[in-house]
Image (tube, rainbow, N blue to C red; front, top):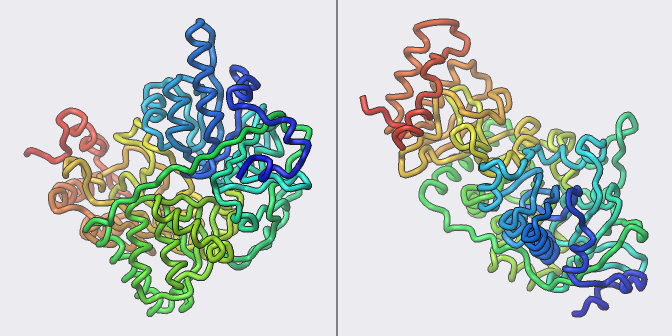
Length: 506
């Protein structure tokens, strides 16, 4: 299928150009809003052309960096190539690319880690500065000049509204039959003129099928023909399956006790192998007619939809492995009736998360004995990926799970520590912690009660006595609401930095 088949708005055909020509329209120092959310719907050609331009400018001794705002992570041919070319000055709100991560932790890229529900509105409020250019991947353009969204909606609606200029990447490889899958809500407003968002059920549609753009803003149209990032998910390992089993048993128990409705509440699942293991567990679990209300649809939710265990799924992006993507493309008519893709300011909106009663499941790097959660930083200072949408769902969800294996680095790191080296979610936002060792239900417990349950249920045996000893000694001195020994609270992290192992040798 040619670009003329996808771009049915004649005025835009006269603005078709190469990626290199379009990159020439992006000067040094500008703020660029790019499409993309968790390896889906990101521009494929412009970032590589920008990287080439940056290298050429640097070779001549000229500065060239741009500030890039997206929905979440992109892929190697977007973040990776620009980071490798030292073309990124600032980046927000989330990143998974290893080259960009290295540049961030080296101080070469100024990274702003943000709750995903904040990004569009903070940009709209003007808190982040002026957006000069938006680079947005679309599947096509209608005869009326409306844009057919791609595999990720993300912040594209807001970028198109606030950017001075727009460059469209029209991807002719992604399935045109996705048209109609999207629900773009244009009822948001800036305070004090906001009104309630009229979604009372996870599969409600309240918006439009297309993105709007002022035609006068569109300065370039670039054709691409390339699929999204192949999100390779490992077969769930023993630990992931144990974590999934604890969660599913817990949900069944909550339903039996009357604390969950029999029809189950909508499910949000973070990204990764543990999340997919939970979804795989739901496939054979006792729950039917499930609903998804999440950020990203991964392989596991497609499995649930195909099996009839989940009736509808709402998200802002579809991020799949190659095999799952082929199934999606081959059965697009089936999935189009069951999947709703929305802007992330809707998929992650705290108002909706609380109203719908979302069951939230997100990963973490570490938790401390009182339930504070570190989702972002390794040893307190090194950025991993970012907070993503976990905070949007954790504070507002009906139930909120944080999950992790109990140890990392072949047992040299305990993921349950005396005090978190960095806190993204305080103990007040943490209801349930799960490792392969067990599940700690923290609801209704005081800090000291939480600590003992976490030690008993979640800590690896190699660290349990060590952590119990710390807690017992902390309770013997000082204020007793949240006992700590401050000179030792981060000693486990210090020990790892010095010796490569958190375990005490005493």
